Image 1: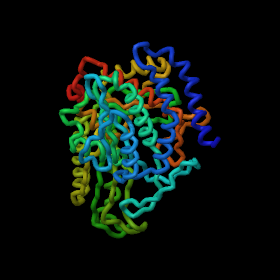
Image 2 (image 1 turned 30 degrees about the horizontal axis):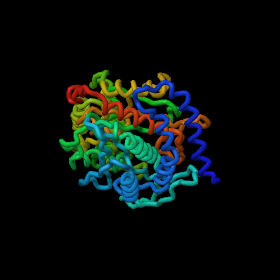
Image 3 (image 1 turned 30 degrees about the vertical axis):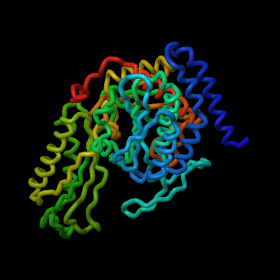
Image 4 (image 1 turned 135 degrees about the vertical axis):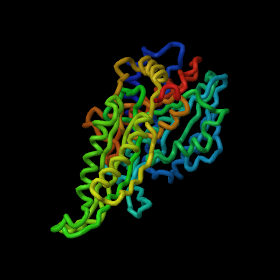
Length: 443
């Protein structure tokens, strides 16, 4: 028996052992999703490892798209929806009973990272970025896990479609890592009236949560990912005679310090905000005052009011400081990026009830809101949305980080993810009361 085959069965029997502890919690009226998910373990492992080994960069997910299309074609009850989805894929799993539509999103793209895990299915792909830099490609954010879990969930619910009310709208999103996928799918009509979902759901593996746990964050969960590029101008000169000109370096330094005062003195302390300058560049040698300094910064917020306010305050600050120093007007290029993610509190409460029923209260954890980016938030602006976390930390390792070349999640989370996602969608398809429109909740 091959070592890979042993790996399959090792994970399968480990999950069955845990299943025996959790199964007593499941409702007698619902399918036993832990048992049904265990039937998908071997295929989920093969899916994950194939996708991992053949990782592709954002908006170049051609082979990944082909693999998902072939996999979906083999699932009874699945109908692919044609549309301008780019390298994404959209499909509908139709139940045989009337009911609502529930959307499930999985991201598809990998990162420009050269993998160093040493795994037998490590990705060896080499690609070239738009600037000409050659890089390795790696699923270092767990999207391979997400896709494998999603396929297992669809196979599981397909086996129950004679009892399944409504439909599951499967969204394979390309370009999530560059914040391009969700908006393009929405603009292409993914939420057409005939398939407008009751809610949109997704999961994300997380390496700081141990296997067997699930993480939730009601309300704001991720940040608006905005930023700016700034050029501060002077007129250059000799470093020995700064009084003869305008030096842009101390002007830029004053601006950087002033940005922090914006956050601490002009933004409501109850509204989270971050301004971080990540790059500053100016000058060529020690005794020459440069004619310009360039800055790049990221700006993170949650609510839209603070988001807009920060742009106004940053613009006022850089213009005022330059004018006070007698410098030319600076060149500010401000941009709005990925929208913040809002986890609908009513939906979160319903889903966490499923977590506790399926796995027990000790598996249901809550984590604080962060300022990282995730374009799933665009879906949650249209329909109630919730993206939860699933623990993939290995018990024999120190917690790892996403977006690193050594990221190696605990594959037992595949089977657990299939069980949880299937149970959550099953529950939502059986809900009878509409959720509050997110526009009434988001500030």
